Each structure stands twice: as C-alpha cells, then as structure tokens.
Length: 312
Image: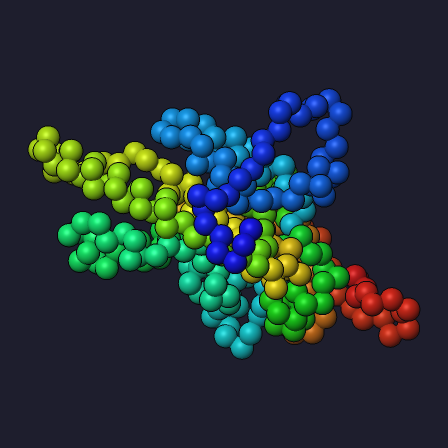
C-alpha cells in the first residue's frame, strides 16, 4: 500500500483450496495470518445484497477464530467514589459497561478510514450538507476495550488501572457467549483507508432509492443495503500502530441493543492492584466471595531477579 491507500485499490488473493480442518493448527494459523480488516473489506466488496450478507457472516466466523481463551480488562479506581461504586456494582452484576468511542483516549479511534465530501456533492440534497452525509460513523454504537495482556503488563496497570491503584479482571471467553459474540481483535496500521469511492456509490444508491420509493408514494424510505454498516464494523477495529503494545480486543454493540450500554460478562479471576487502597481491596474481595471468583492481590518481591509482580 502507498501513502494514499484507496479502498478500490485493495487486493486479496483468496486461497484456491479449502482449509484442511482435520490438521488445522489454530495457533500456527494465527501467527502466520494475523487479522487483516483491509482484506476483509476487499472480500466484502465482491458481493452485493444477499451475497454480501453471507460474505459478512463468513468473515465473522473467521474473526471468531482469533479470540484467545482468556481476555483481561483493567479498571481504574479514583477519588470519585460515586464512579468507583458504579464500577464495583457493574462487576458485581457480572456486566461490562460500554461507552461512546468519542470518549476514548485516542482522537483517531475508529478513524482508520475517511472519505472526501467534495466528491459527494452530486445532488442538491448532498450539496446542502457539503457532501458529508455521515459525520460520525460511531454515533450508533457503544464499545469497550479488553486486552490479551495478562497481569504482568506494567503499561496496562499504569495507563488503565490508575498506576496500580485499580484492578484487573480476567474473562474466560468460552464461558461468556454474549461478550465473545461482539468482540473483535484490533488490527494496527500506519495508514488510513480512503473509502470515498464506496461512499459515492452508496450516496448514488440512496438518491436513486429515495427517488424510486418516493415515486411510489412511500412516506418512509427503507434501504436494506447494509454494506456501509458491515464496512464500518470491521474498519472500526483498526488503530494506529503506536498502540500495538495494548494487544487490544474490542467489544462493540449497537447503541440501542437490548441491555445497552452493558454486556454480560462472567469474571474468571479478579486481580487487585499493587497500590489499591485497603478499602477498595476489601470491597473487591467481598465481590469475589459473593460471585465465587478467586481474588488475588498483586505484590512486589524485592529480591526477585525477574521483572514480574507476585500474585498473592
């Protein structure tokens, strides 16, 4: 890919023969074939209508293969006692809170793709909005981040658990069907993708469909083409390569989904930060006891030869 990566220039050579499921080595396959949403979008663009729906379902099934057995989530605890209480209550209720992506700490989050609105000024309707008929692709979704980094990750404790004053929870993905069903691995890239050509085609389709349905007297215009939604869902899991140390996995749901802004998540283990206050540590221990979940206190061995926290 060059400096200006356009969606119409993507290319993916599909395998000529089916995978040998009998001798399939999942770990080897994950190492040799890391998740590539650019390739996924290329494959998605090869179909239309029902065919595209089936392609997306196939891509989704492949993505499931990238989920590890265990994922972790780091939580901060601050002087805001009301917020702390909400976090602990959410943990106790075996749920995870999902927020708006605009509130994430990366201003480029879910902006691995873009389009030029000047190229979409193809009708009076689009001219009135300067060709920008979608301002924020993430408006209709909620999301949260998990990680494959275990409790020996010093950056994760520092950045997302209040410099070790918070806690970390592990989740067995096989025992969390709701959580695992909406979790995708994050891909890291140094480039953003120009999707102008796709947006222009979609705009043309919308205008034609609006005109056609309006001529039939329809008061409500219904468009069944989900291509933009599929593409957005996939490409929103790409971040800049500088974040790759996080080994992130992202759980995303529709903002109006049942139960939003929460997803069910049964904890596997709870790890209390090295600098977590005694009061908060006792609350976490109480939650663990009620849920029947092991609670461990992270410690520091002064005479250990390795850069590892002890787990008490």
